[in-house]
Amino acid sequence: MSLHDEIVQIGTDSLAASRELNLLTASKKNSILMAMADELDSSKPKIIEANKKDIEEAHNAGLSDAMIDRLTLNDVRIDGIIKGLREIADLKDPIGERISRWIRPNGLEIAKIRVPIGVIGIIYESRPNVTADTASLCIKTGNAIILRGGKEAINSNKAIAIALIKGGESKGLPKNAIQLIQTTDREAVRELVQLEGIVDLVIPRGGETLIRAVTELARVPVIKHYKGICHTYVDESADLEMALRIAINAKCQRPGVCNSMETILVHEKIAEEFLPRMAEAMSERNVELRGDEATRKILEDINEATEEDWHEEYLDLILAVRIVASTKEAVEHINKYGSGHSDAIIAENETAQKTFTQEVDSASLYINASTRFTDGGEFGMGAEIGVSTDKLHARGPMGLEELTSYKYIVVGQGQIRE
Image (cartoon, rainbow, N blue to C red; front, side, top):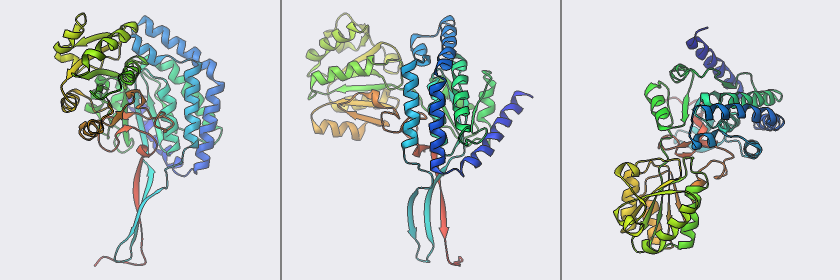
């Protein structure tokens, strides 16, 4: 069988599975999810062993520390995946929910009802947890899922998918509701994203190069997650102890992820007090600072920030620093250089807070909190299928509701249109 025929067959099987999934009750789907979680738990040694092979090959291939961190699984991270599945099972099922209802003057009753999207393709790099997170969200919402992970995590992805399918099918998961494309041939991506009439939505998760390639190739709808160039603005009214604690967390807690801070903006009135303290704390954590001219007058030994630095998603222990004269200037910088992902203001002044949240055009905005919270699990969604930097049809962390469409049910008593 050719690769084209193989991917068409996977898509056709997924389409059939999606129609069976649509008939499952909420309690049935929940029992499937719990069985998937239990099987992951009992398969933990196999998953970790498979992950070790991927990590060894990643080191041999010279992948960055950030990529290897994303790739790595251990007991704690697998327990987090399992916890996420069980939390999703406990969440309210959105399918069948009546979004709205109204009656027309002619007596027609119109209801807007949530329904599954259908068949969803996920194309992702490095993170094997995506295999479980996205599959569980899709099953909860009655969507069949086709997974195409990167070659760097192929062994981990296979081990996780086997456990999910085994556990799910023991409780009635339709055959082919979860499918992992086994080949790492990049041509499989092209074939998948061109399955018009079979695949309803593709969500790429990974670097900007991957996402742009998928978007250019696709003949089916794509929800994009471009770069996570996240900012923190420290206002003149900020509690500086709070600002320092948030900045350290946003940059250092896990620098290789999309919601970590890449640029910090500091009001000129508190720069001389705040920047030396921040620089010392960042130096202790091996963070390289790159600053504008005003910053380098205060922190003389740091590197110069170039125009390219303001556009950069480092995913590493590097931080761009700029001094601004006002909240408005901070907003202008973020709207020019940001990626619409997550941005934060540290301020006590309510006018500054309001200006920031009204005028910064990003999916998630924070007041006195770290951008690291932009995550489906942290938002109470159990997990996420991605973080959309698009505005249609989903924006920010995508949970259950974002994996639904809707239909209109119109009830009459014999009305005809004159």
